[in-house]
Amino acid sequence: MENSKIEKLIIIGSGPAGLTAAIYAARGSLEPLVIAGREAGGQLTLTTDVDDFPGFEEGIQGPELMTKIRKQAERFNTRFISENVTSVDFSKPPFVIKTETGVLKARAVIIATGASAKWLDLESEQKLRGKGVSACAVCDGFFFKGKTVAVVGGGDTAMREVNYLSKLCKQVTVIHRRAELRAQPALQELVKAKSNVDFIWNSAVIEVLGQEKVTGLKIKNTQTGEISELPVDGVFVAIGHQPNTGFLDGQLKLDEKGYIEVENETKTNIPGVFVAGDAADHRYRQAVTAAGAGCKAAFDVEEYLEHIQLPTEGNGM
Image (cartoon, rainbow, N blue to C red; front, side):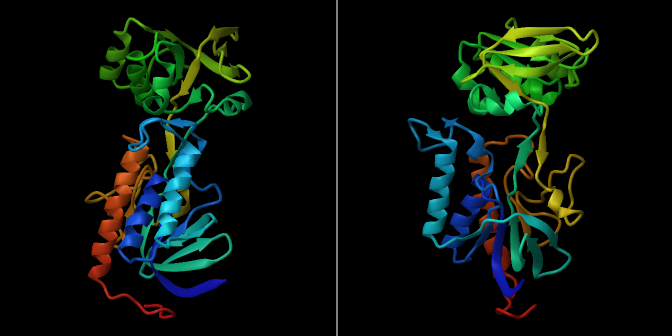
């Protein structure tokens, strides 16, 4: 059913970027409505220990952190819809957002849908996520200090993970399905110079070993078919991220990888449509940077709405 009310602000996404935007927007009397999605909370809901978010000296579990931020947004009367967005129409204001069961309209929109790590699609990998399987060295590398880990991948993302982990871990093994890396030469030289980094070429991980935690990897040589095992304490999957922007379907300008292109921090190519967090940020991908972007987006929306005439409820213009 179509809702005739035109919202001042709709925020799509409920990770650190979306919820921080909601907190600031609500305190600015923008009465935000958050479309949280069926799996609310973003990637942190899949993370166990979070030690790098300011304010928690003993660390905090990812789901608990997101619950706290959401409750903070609710304290300022932020409203939530637990549905996924199926399509949008940004051709003219008010902007139209279709969910699984309804149609919403808004004068301004913040997209904070984030990005998802690409995984190996192994049952054993999914079973041990957060128990030695990770897709973020900066997030989880500290827990493997002095231990042995593997990094799967051969691109820029993988080599940055290797470089970071090499400073913490006793040994880092790179597993790559090709005979050479795809990363830029400078990154290749950097990691190849590390005394505690070695490489397994032309190989793919076919199983993550362990019950309660990772104990090793089963690896298959892509040329000979030979199968071997590698004992490790953890594995970092670094084969890239996929921004969650498929629902936009040509409504906004995206780069070649699907990330939303930004102008002046949070503005998209459509006036009144803003973005915060990993849907646009393919470099940092941290909860704290996403939260900071959410704050900026809320301020930018407030400034935008101050300079346009807000419609009355039920009026399409």
